[in-house]
Length: 377
Image 1 (tube, rainbow, N blue to C red):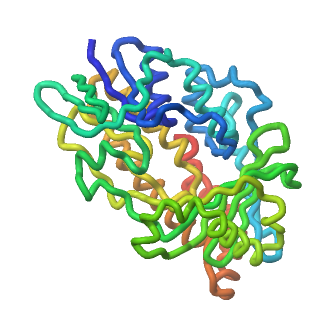
Image 2: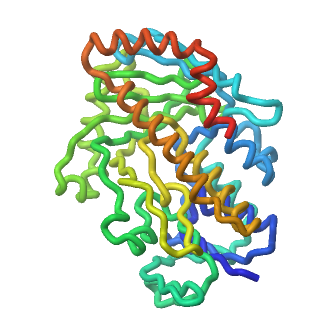
Image 3: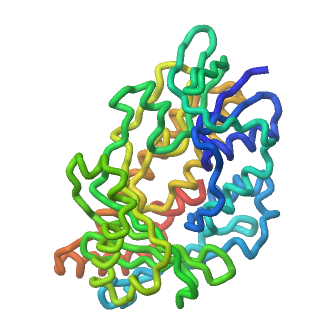
């Protein structure tokens, strides 16, 4: 029996482990550098039909319906006036069994963990070295050393595995943007609300049936190297509140009053697609490629990529990277286009953007190419 080391207990690593549990032809261990998995995080994620279809194959339908929400539309608004620009019907990409879904990230992690034996996850395991002989010899900071046939790196955007493999070239780059995350109670719009402003946008959507909403804002913000490396800056409440005040002052919504538990994160993205030279080392999720967060496909692609990798190993194929590179380029290009279009500053450009949005949101062929091609896998 072949042995697999999974580095990272995030969405991609845990979903991949679930697939292995259902197959049993490969043994595995998950190595997580933290000492536990935080299930108190109330922030939301969006899952399109491509990933819901895969999750349902491992029992996701059993999750409590009150912990999920099924938005039917994305409503576009001008942030300053709250005037509606247009809407996109998400339900047209659904099928009888799989629907566009929003929920708390912690609920998804909790579900994925429920299917994995506790002894399969090794905490406080920080990978420090990889030696390649006939097998892969992994060394961890606690002096533990083990040999495996395969290594699956699912350790996120700041992937230690990727840094070991590619040195400085494996490090992500700052995207000149900052994310604000928070929670809102009892927002009036029950679908996904996307507000566009100069050099920022924010999204509000329900994460369950209990009138709890997720708030996420992306703000353009250039920082010098010292500021980027100063992690205390992003934990500074004054810095966070100043950013929230700034977008609230350019919005028709009083965000400083309605958004609670606000946290601030610098946005890092991958510089380029990188493929390990060893055929038994695989990168998945954000460790493979981290996108700008303007297309809401991070979690879905983590699940989809893990599924592709599992099928590749099960069938002893070698198509994983070929397929993943193609999909990654599609997602990345759409993310960059959205980021640019959402943040326009010039009023003339904004006027014409809104006209295009109204037209494209009703164009079936465009929506099928731009969204359907991704959402329906």
